[in-house]
Image (cartoon, rainbow over all chains, first blue to last red; front, side, top):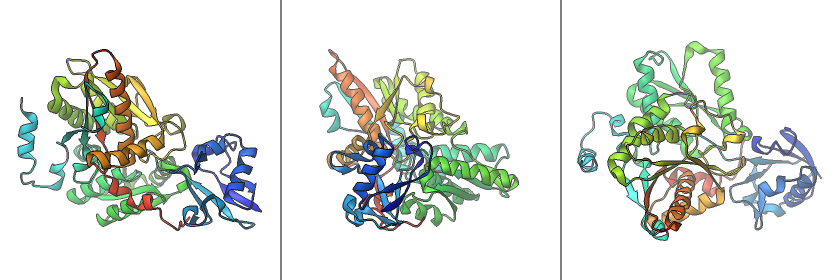
Length: 90
Length: 321
């Protein structure tokens, strides 16, 4: 599955400044593994021992994965996965 | 002198305008939390008792008053700024009370509660890209202002000296009135840095030394809404790190857990940035308490209430980009 991943500003240090990268995987978990292999270090920012960190919001297209099957949410070719940061400052 | 007592009597009195209710907030002891640190008391200044529900009422009012006084803000212009929400609520309330138009630029993923509150005051909202966070909102407001400078008064909370001034004149002085010489440490989170800068400047003028410590998220990607990881952000012009004795990094999870604990143990339902502040204050208190005969009093800030975050805490199911 070819998936487009939208990268928020705080994680662009891992993607060489790119705001969007391509990844492969049939589930959210598989895409995160693929991201980690292409951009080492990024997984630690997104996940802890229990899975996705509580404050990290991941959307498949327009749907929060908490309302789908979390990291086991299945993806289709052409889906967009968005990592949305918290809002900082003022 | 009995500053606290006087204010406690004055506070419930009638007000000529809601903006006169800004400031003079209570200070409450965290008895359960500070039971972990014998010899050290921890107090929380309840800034959410301001009329707009957050600490931001103070800088917003000071910035508006100073701008009206010197003619930068007039009835013909619209006050505009980038805000993650609380400052926006404050501008909206003050704008409505004093008769000035307000437009706000905020990342589209701010909580629904804050969009609803600001619009209730008649404020116009302009959304910036949620992927770019609050720096995206700053860039967008700069663009809008440069296109039609005559239309706007750009309040610019990140670079406006009236922001820390509000805390120099208000928050810092009030803490001294409330605790006097008992105060040994002050801890506050960095957002615009106005609270830290202004309060610290006042506390450092006190005749006894007071240690002032800033709290910031430990990483660029964090969930402490309202706080800024300075190393990866557009650094506010008002931020002068040399004012602080120390900058203490706090993990998002620690801030969130402390917010839950404050509700369960202290009956204080606060936002995550307050959780981070109290987590930081507790670390500082533990250090003091661990010293032989160590004693002290630590003050930190309750920026806002947790109900302002109910929407993102239960998560908005759909997202429109």
